[in-house]
Image (tube, rainbow, N blue to C red; front, side, top):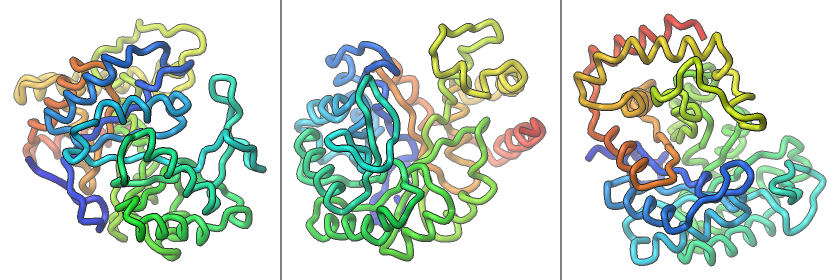
Length: 327
């Protein structure tokens, strides 16, 4: 199975990883049976989806707790990542948002990051993380200087508690600042074939500097699975109602694009979602694609994407189709 190095960390993984935001439950995702979540994670590992990503804020610690339970006896088989920098232990000058009635703040100080990691290690039942991300950045770097944030990461790395340095939801300036302050292996950003803002600056910069990209929401909240139609309606409060790609004009473009690739699905014996995952992973420079799943069946469907090896001719065709959308 082809693997991709995470930055220059020496850690190599297949392109497809599993995101665990949804298994945290809460208001965003609703009730979730932990037993099913654990089965889904374990099935992913069995099928070779070995990069498992989580965060303390997913379900206010619940996702990390479930991941920790799922990986007991399997920790040596996976690349495990979590995040730091979002707090509800204490207030800071930087309010993030209210999550399930809890006020959450940003804190990228050294002391807070180290405490985050110590607590995450306990929930995840492990002695180290393969990748640690800062979850959201603080634009006022006089409050939390990047140098202090990286000092925390380098201290944790020297202690053997993390192996690679990551940052999520960044700008090109932050990529440069992290590298100057001590290093950066990977960024995690929202990216799909319908949400391509990274292609202008961030992606070329990462390619130039040897920083990996892990793309979350590559299936655009289900829009690119082939299961959504123009008649699909979501209840009030559903996040898809605020996603520009679900609005009529862009939704139609997405569905027409997928419709035009039906013959490719037949050629490769895969679903539209599998085709999109494979295409996303193969675009520009090697991309780590992070796909969420809540059940073993969803995991099994996602895993099939790892066996889809698109020909150069088909990649070129799909690229031309995508560029013709003029998004």
